[in-house]
Image (cartoon, rainbow, N blue to C red):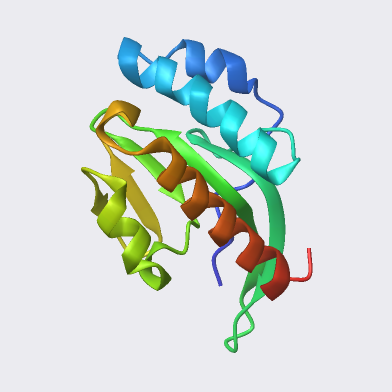
Length: 138
């Protein structure tokens, strides 16, 4: 059984964001950093080499595989901002109001914060985070 390579590190979140080449994505990352810290009450932690996480939970699958993962977070990728654990699949009414975005299984992808309604994004993140807290008793 393989280990989860996405683990919390002691690397500097600020240094990681400062190194983001795209100025808009870097500035948006600082806005998301503040927003997620306010919503979760957790300090940011760099997970692996590219995920900024807030809080964590422990999971265990029926197969016996288990590990820890971030409760909420984001990654400033070259092509977009990936926001994790919003629970967006459960809230199509919020997605309709969000603005320009794409979705994956557990990620919400946006090019820049100016493409979306920040209040709706905040509600998605809050709702997803609160659901994760209940599910994992964190």
